[in-house]
Length: 337
Image 1 (cartoon, rainbow, N blue to C red):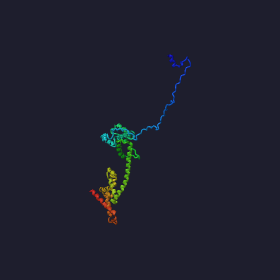
Image 2: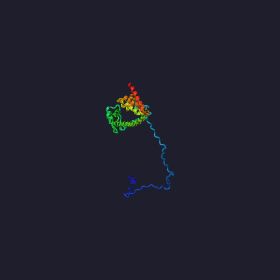
Image 3: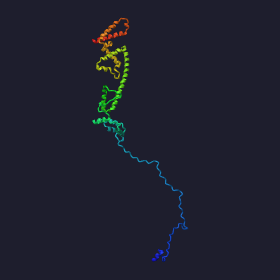
Image 4: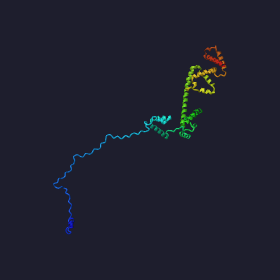
């Protein structure tokens, strides 16, 4: 039994050691179908090409982004009380006026910040406050160019003007006010120059106007006094010269409210000439003669001696002179009674 199996599974073992039998090659499958079997049909290619899926259509209107609800600001005009300016300012009227310039709270804050930035940049100089200590005020004045005291202002004039005592009487009070209000020295110098320059222009204009007024007054007095203009004018001058020293210069240089010189007023000159006749009647005919009455009587005697002589009745000036002497004589006698 073993031998049979051995031979079946090991052919090389047959015989007595003869040539081994070659192994049988495996059978290849037949590619060609067995005759009589149908040949499989070739796959049918579809006549219509497969449809490519269309690209997704983008909507014509873009989708609306979700709206985020606005968060109400505390500083919005609709949330602030209507009187927020009054509440912020309290009793400070200046601050209230400042806040009223801003249309809303945000604008007011921006204005405040802009101002602070300008101060920090030196575009706006700080100001002195009433609550400053002496040390703070001194430091502020040093920074702002304000002298230590009013008499430390060194005023110089562009045209080299030297300030007189009379000018100092005007300037010194101005310097006191300037220092109390912390006016820098440069600014005070410019103001002083402007003041004195404007005053010089005013004086020049006044001098021109005085000449015009003098001409107008002389014409009016000529019409009122005729040929007595010179005599009456001299009487007024003599009367002024007799005034006390304390008022004489003041009267001579006085001016009316409109700036016109007092002696360029025809009304004043007529009044003064009438006063001169009353105060010193003899001055109207003999001036400041030492013995007015004696001088008058002597001249009267001389003129009376001409009466009845040829040509007397035609000598109107001599006749008028005699009448004036009579009037002066009468006035003096009235004063002496």
